[in-house]
Amino acid sequence: MTEAPAIDLNRHVYGNPDAEITVVEYGDLECPYCGAAAPVLHELVDSSNGRVRLVFRHFPLFEIHPFALTAALAAESTGEQFWDFVWVLFKHQAKLSDPDLQHWAEKVGVADPASVTGEAAQAARAAVEADYASGVALGVRGTPTLCINDRLYTGRVELRELRAALGLTR
Image (tube, rainbow, N blue to C red; front, top):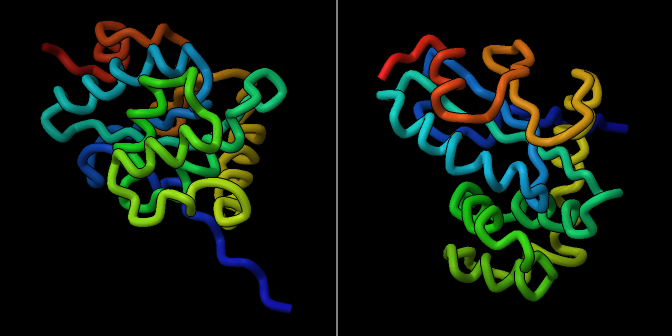
């Protein structure tokens, strides 16, 4: 029996892949706090002159958010459109049903929008589970949870506080 290939936990990088600072977000695509954090993290990376990269890992709080797991599977199924899809979902968290997910996939240019839901999306399950398990191992209990260069960040997800924590002046 062959072992399944290891999942790259850093597969979803936004920003400079070689940045000196890595911010890992354990997030839930239906979580309103993650939705509020998304533009802050986006701005943090975009204004860092290539010094910061964001890595997203799925941590769907499926017991609280009924569409969190299907949204994670859908996002994982979008391939190169991952970040475009994720930004759209954070803006439209009240519309995460299967037809909505297919609609957003079409909007961001996924070749086969039906591939992000149902049985087709189940191919992404191992990746979502690997992200979730890595969060559990770190003690993640809620979302968003951030780690900066492998250290748990406990401050507020606000641009000024994050820049200070990262040693970025502006």
